[in-house]
Image (tube, rainbow, N blue to C red; front, side):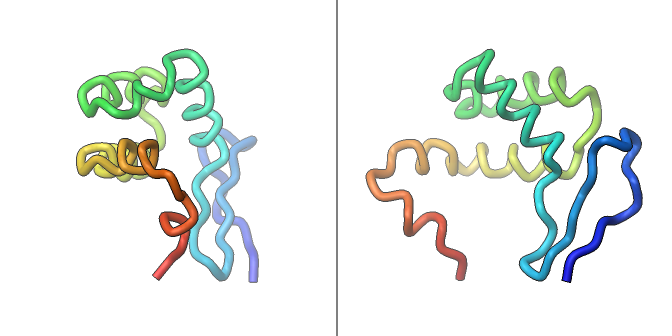
Length: 94
């Protein structure tokens, strides 16, 4: 089953829902890619810096995605994933 929810403010951005659950918005992923390209991946390890950069890059949009990402950074998920030798167990869902 796959369908698209109501159009977001910017019609070129679409959210899709599948049997696996809601996918992260491609616009937000593009913003993260741009942030890492310009600031480096270490910018996502520091909570204060990440919060400031995400606020600048997202222009007060993607509040849910930003909140979830910042929660992961706060508990050290980014560092744990970056420092692991074997990423495959991290990708498995329960």
